[in-house]
Amino acid sequence: MKKIVIGCGLFLLAFAVQANGVREDVDFTSEKSRTSYAFGMTVGGDLEQTGLEIDYFAFTEGLRAAMERRQTIMDREEALEIVQDAFENAVRKQNSVLREQEEQFLAENAGRPGVQTTESGLQYTILEQGSGPKPAESDVVRVHYEGALTSGTVFDSSYERGEPEEIPLDMVIPGWAEGIMLMNVGSKHRIYLPSDLAYGERGAGQVIPPYSTLVFTVELLDIVTETDADEE
Image (cartoon, rainbow, N blue to C red; front, top):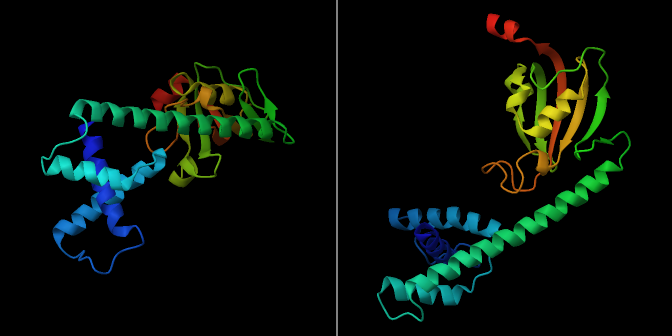
């Protein structure tokens, strides 16, 4: 929490400087000013994503009072509780919006031509139909794939790496395993993984936001037996 409070201070100091663009009467050439500006940009970007609404004047007054050791209108414990509650409320609000957006996408996508929906809620489209066997959950498969968000942002791609991957189906997220087991060797599918079958309300780091449906384009090249994998 201490890091959050310090970060907020740096962000809002920078905001005051650039509220109407970069001010020409402020010198940003010194190491101190450039470092402060960099901290403000970095923390400000993170805060902007939370959707917090802040009274900049009130914040500045609190910042000055704390740094100048003047009397404050609340004690530190109360301040920390307020900050914590504000962040938690902002996250809940943001997650609620993301969840609604995902539900809307899945409902619309389910009605598109060629899209099939399984009992779990996974959706897929057959792009090319193969004639080989289907893998089991205990199998290792060789695949070429691209993973993207519904916005089109690609977060992983064996195509970009220039070679297929060998992946044990019992070690991947549930939706990925289910989607691959629907495929015959030689097939190419586009698979839509609802967040419930992927990374859920937490997301995955800075790459995959909470409540993200993942879109995988997958070619099932082969089923690799454990013996073959060991020999390689």
